[in-house]
Length: 96
Length: 103
Image 1 (cartoon, rainbow over the protein chains, first blue to last red):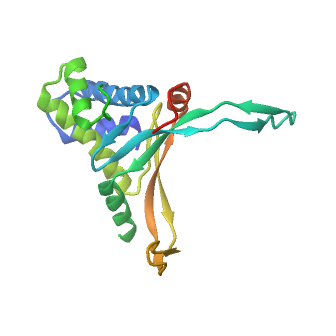
Image 2 (cartoon, each protein chain N blue to C red; image 1 turned 135 degrees about the horizontal axis):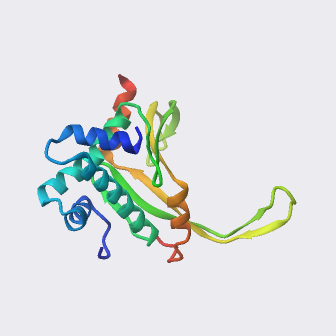
């Protein structure tokens, strides 16, 4: 499912908002979630899951072309942990 | 946002303030947003949200496990799990965050 399909499916599930508004809303939700993560925040959606940052320590890397060692600085990466309802529903689909 | 984690209520509030949806519509939209993603995933369909990231599904086969308390061997059954792969844009933005290394 892509973002535009998500917008379409949400539009089919309700009858009062024009598709244009749903498109704006979906984009705003994703933008706001990104903003929160980009400023070091957490997101907790019950039954869906939580998003947080994981820290990766600095390490020595290599330029694969020249073989030269380069120091890679520490960084944060986004992490998603599925919630219980999500885990159960997805796992249930394995049995069908 | 305050110091707590972002919740569905905060997202609904954002839609109410920035798009002028009424509170009921905003709340319903946020619910539908997460429910439709969950629905795709439980139908074994990956979800690709460009700029944000992809939710993929992985089937894991049964593997041996152990009860950490008793040491008793119990197999961990085959299961299907959701993984999230952040997109380039989100990764780059988060990488630039220079805050503390907690979390």
